Length: 206
Ligand SMILES: [Cu+2]
Image (cartoon, rainbow, N blue to C red; front, side):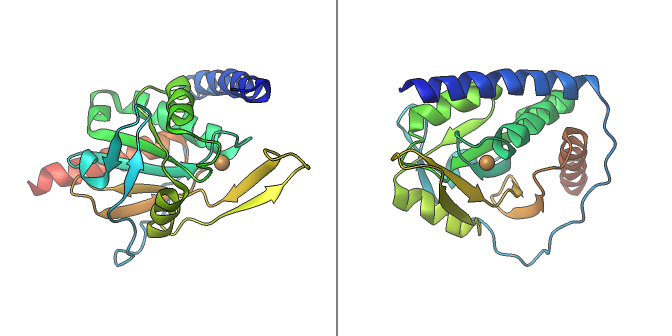
């Protein structure tokens, strides 16, 4: 691990800690975003690398409500902010959070090794699982979810680049079906409320 990555991590961790504290202290009321089109095909089978090096597929998470978010650990803003909101939403859900599995999938597999993803998500919330894979594997899952990403050079060095990426949070049902998307700026309160409603609806159906 080079020094710039360490510095970056330290800054991200500090920022995230401050953000989570602020969010927990503030009740933010936000209108719930509209439900996504029901016939949209999003998701599907995937194979990715877990932080421990093991293989993870969509079947690994069956039975859990999934929050699927794509990004990368060098992201200066949207990714740490969104993952922090998800962490706060888990707090707000209390015991219901045990039925929710957030996963963070990299769009930058060259820099985001499985271990780097694990360290990054652990620093924000241990319940968030960071996933990497080969460039082919991450490209395939990005495509399955309709995720856009594009590199932009920021300097002459090999690692001098940022990645523009789409920032939808996807909710998948316990049987693996796409339920709805949320924009990345959805508040923690709204994320928690949406999940709580979905769980209540599902319980009432059973
Ligand atoms: Cu990002």
